Image 1 (spheres, rainbow, N blue to C red):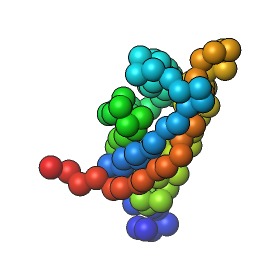
Image 2 (image 1 turned 60 degrees about the horizontal axis):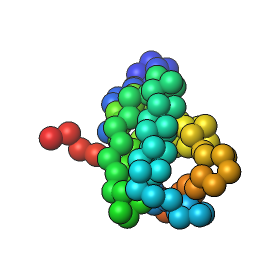
Image 3 (image 1 turned 30 degrees about the vertical axis):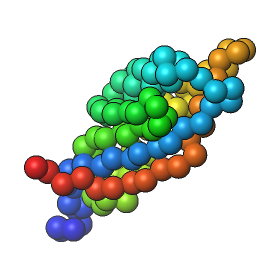
Length: 111
């Protein structure tokens, strides 16, 4: 802190999540679900890159955020991802509903 001001810096963060669905969804349905999540993140004006494994039902959400601390940046990303996931859930009958069952956070280093 300089003269009562917080020092804000950029943090590169990624969160990896594993998803399960009931009933079991197809690869195409999982991809559509992730497209909907990406759209929701875009609607939140959050630039997040999603990399996924359709076969393993995993997705990594990576972004750069400005925050005073890593924890503050993590909290912002988690809130945004959670909001996007909730908005993108499939509640239509016979459509699978995906639930995150595992997550791993890491701070990414610039190349």
